[in-house]
Length: 168
Image (cartoon, rainbow, N blue to C red; front, side, top):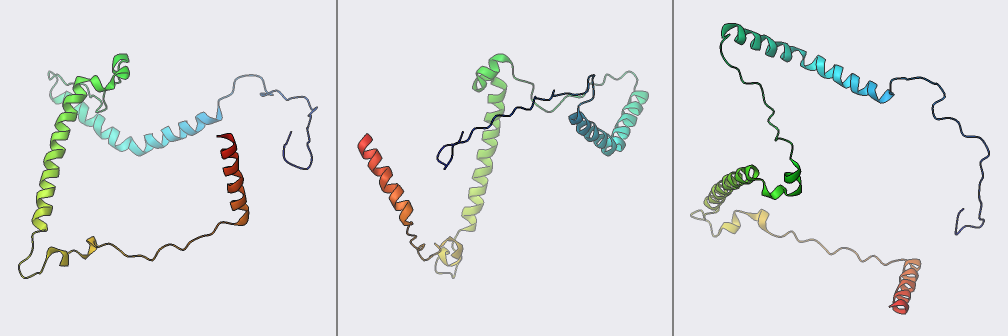
């Protein structure tokens, strides 16, 4: 049903619903074709480098059969446990790495400020450093033109204000 128009209409469909899957039996989902295609493209794109890595690993193991080789590990952080998910700010490993990173950022920021201050020292013969940096001055622009709302908008706003005054 619709409201606010000239006519209120309701529609009833009497056609029986079709079954969602007219053909019985199992079929591969069409969405899986896309993922299979992406996987094949990845295999083709990385085939050369994967072959080289396998050959290098084989050669290393052939030359040094008694050497213990650590398995490769992901650089991604380990998945969070239940307690870590509930209290992510309490993980000690993250805190120590965050602290070290913050210290590094502080040192970098101080070095950058020192370089900027060195850059801003007045040059002999110039009246002031403002003469060298005109880009720091404000850009003056004329004021934006005043846009007057239409009569309909003013009427709706007035009605809205009257409703709020009556209700509150």
